[in-house]
Length: 315
Image (cartoon, rainbow, N blue to C red; front, side, top):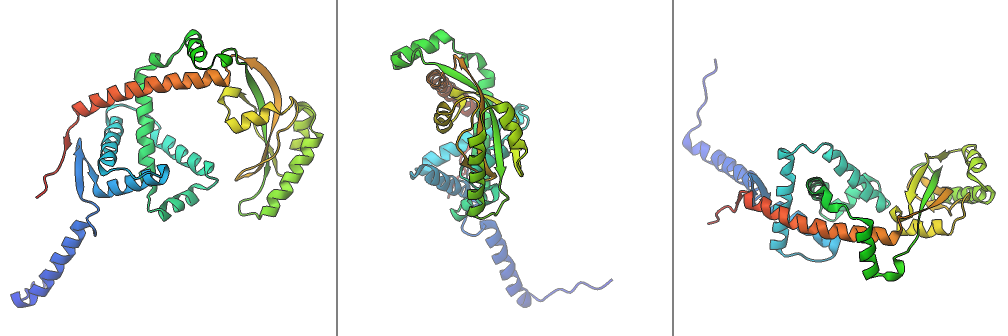
């Protein structure tokens, strides 16, 4: 065995100084970004968390929040996410990822491009995903525990609608049977490729007279996908698509719309009257939101009363 070499004290001093400097730098994490501000049931909220959430709020709302507003929001989110340890809520991470992908899609970007755009603004994807996770858990908890509170009778909805907009009390709703048709455009294709596919979609639209024969024509085209049938109430459709369908005759196609995957059109195969008018859905959503906010406030107070929230002492 080799004998251990012991440096003289004079020789060890520079080495000790270097080690101490390195350990100090690691413990501080650079600009004290990992400093713990508050501990929620053993889970720390750091200065970095506050910086990230502040940026997120500023980017998403164009308002500069106060430090206390951000801290309270983070504490509440820690309490909500902590419910995963107490209750068996399955598939939440998958729901978070799906919500993240859908956000990117609404911004006409891939998840990778969306993540890169967040990074340019100094935001990590985890900042947004943690916010989404807290909201999803909270919605499931409240709606699961107080499910009956969100059931409103037609009479209650009609009374609210009558008081709010009497002219909409007898509004008519419709259920639409649709077949999405996608003219595929490969990723990275130039704008001219999209323009060419729009022309093809318009050509099909001119010949399309009913779903039976028209869908067969669509399937015969190259790089065209006829997707499964969907049935949607008018009230459940985005306002932009409502307007388009209201102007489209049964058995015909909507105008082409450019998406990330290519050019999409919808075949309107049937239109049936229903009691689910947009005005009534808006009233139901309004009533549900009022109930949700009230129950959320009550349940959050219970959580905070039971929680261990510690503020580390500072010298």
